[in-house]
Amino acid sequence: MTDKDRRPLDGIRVIEVGQLLAGPFAGCMLAYFGAEVIKIEPPEGDPIRGWRVLENGTSHWWRSIGRNKKSITLDLKKSEGQKIARQLIDSADVVIENFRPGVMEGWGLGPDEIKQSNPKLVYARISGYGQTGPYASKPGFASVCEGMSGFRYVNGFPDQAPVRPNLSIGDTISGIHAALGIALALLERERNADGEGQVVDVALYESMFNLMEAVVPEFSGAGVIRQPSGTTVTGIVPTNTYRCKNGKYVVIGGNGDSIFQRLMEVAGHPEMAHDPRMANNAGRVQHELEIDNALAAWCMSKDADEILQLLEQARVPGGPIYNVQDMFADPHFNARGMFEQVEINGKPLQIPAILPKLSDTPGRTDWPGGDIGSHTQEILQSVLNLSQAQIDELKTTGVI
Image: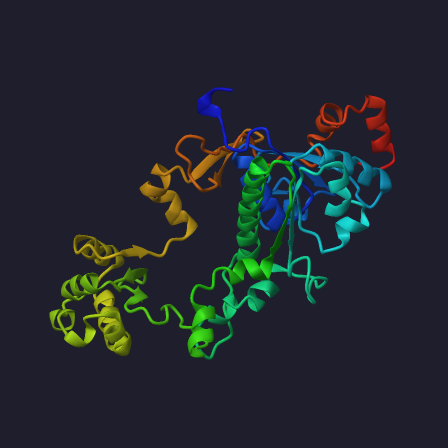
C-alpha cells in the first residue's frame, strides 16, 4: 500500500451486527475510511436490501450503505451461529450492534462476556433510548425518538402537526455519533497503557437531543420554550425562504448587521437598510413581519436566478432549494466529488461520497454493497480457518 492509498482506519477490523440504518450507517463510515467491516446478516439479509427503489430485487440504497463491507450470513438464533459470531468478535477491534438492549446478552455476545476474551474491543451499541434508564427496554424507531428528543416539536409551523423530514434523520445522526464515539474510543485505547476498549452507548433520542442548540439553557435560564417557527429561525432576522416569480424558492440569510444593510439596499428598501430600529438583530426581531413582507414582495417580482445573482453581487448569503436532480447538475457538487460511480452488473450507479473530507488520507468507495453472504466463504476460511467440510456442514444445518 502506498501513502496515497493509506486511510485512517486501515488495519482496524469491525464486526457489524446491526441492521437497517443506524448501525449500518456507522459501519459504512468506518469502511469508507479504511476499516475492514465484516457485516453479519441473517440468512435472509438485512431488510434494507429490499427497501424503497429496487433493481433486480436489491435496493439502490443497499449499494450505498453496504459499500466496502464484507457480508457474511449467520443465524444468530442458533448456538453454532452465536459461536462463530463470538469468534469473529474476538478477532476484532470494534463491534457495532443496534438491537434492543439485552438481545446481544441473550446470545452470549454482550460486552461483559466479550471483555473476558477480547478486552481491547470497542463495543458500540445503538438503541432508541440507551442501555440504561427506565425506557431502555422500549422499542425505539427514529420517528418516535425524534419526537421525544424535542427535535420534532420545533420542526414545523405553529398550530399544525409537527413535520418530519422525508428521511430517517434520527438513524443517520445516531450513526454519525456512533462513528465519532468509536474513533474517540480507539484513540483512548491507543493512549491507555492497558490497551483496553470501552462501551460506546448511543441513543437515537439523545443523538437528536444533541442538535437542540440553545433550547435547554433558554428554558433553564429564562423559562422559554422554543416553539415551531415554519421557515424562519426564532430570534434571528432575517433568515427565511421566499417564493420567486417563477415558482422556485430561495433561502436568504441576511441576519448580520452589515449584511442586512446590503440586502435591503439591493431589495430596493434603503429606508429599512438605514433604519436605526433595525440596526441590530434585537431590533430586527421586533420588526420581523415588516422585513419579511418586504423581502417576500421583492422575491415575487423576479425569477429565482435573478434574485440569487443580485444577492451574490451584494455579498448576501442566498441559495436555491435543490432536489436531487439539481444536485447532479450543479458544478460545485461535481467539483467537490460528492458523487462516486460504482458498477452493478456492468451498469453505472452514482452513490454519495461519505464525509468528512481529509486532505492526506481520504476515504473512498472500493466496491458497492454486494450480494447476501458474498464474503461468507472468504471470512470463515481466512479469519476463522474453517475447512471446506466445516463450511459445508454449516450450510447444511442452516447456520449460514
